[in-house]
Length: 219
Image (tube, rainbow, N blue to C red; front, side, top):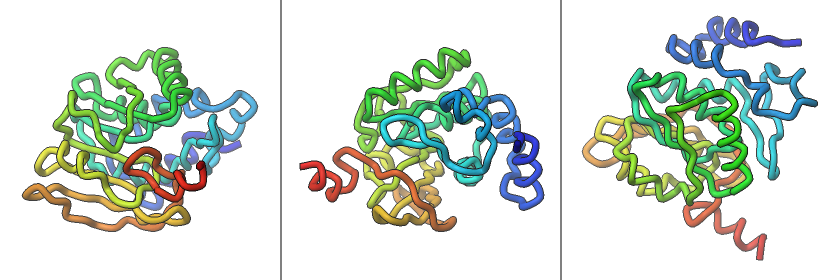
């Protein structure tokens, strides 16, 4: 059965993760706490796992690639669109430390409740979950040093760019429903200067900045 140490060794060998605070966060947060007991034996397989409402907890390597691209530091104020069941927000909360803050949002009430329960269970105090359409961001806690989107989006919502600090970093999977390109944007003069990380497949963003095709399918 794979272990945390196996994943950390792999990331170091492949130079996927170089930020030491990410290793500390990964070691501190038990992935098994965010999945069903019947899946605990798969917790450190390098693969996504199902959660609730047809959602999933991402592959560990995908998560770490995104967090590495954020260039996180202690004390950062971070916004996450797509709380899921709270695993990535928990990692973010540990990475930025007690002086930092993570605001995570989701549009699905069951995921909000699951995230709240997981934060309470793990005594995570500097991450806050809010039920809202995440494409609008959360202006009350802005501006943000870092923003991460954990759902496929057709484009980056403008409110998130507006709420990102000048010089801040945003990471998001952008594309269509089948495939997305992971982009890393650094805000310069009010706009994002983009780099491209690779091809991925995420669950789709919902809400007014999501895919119109989903709305048509649901009608």
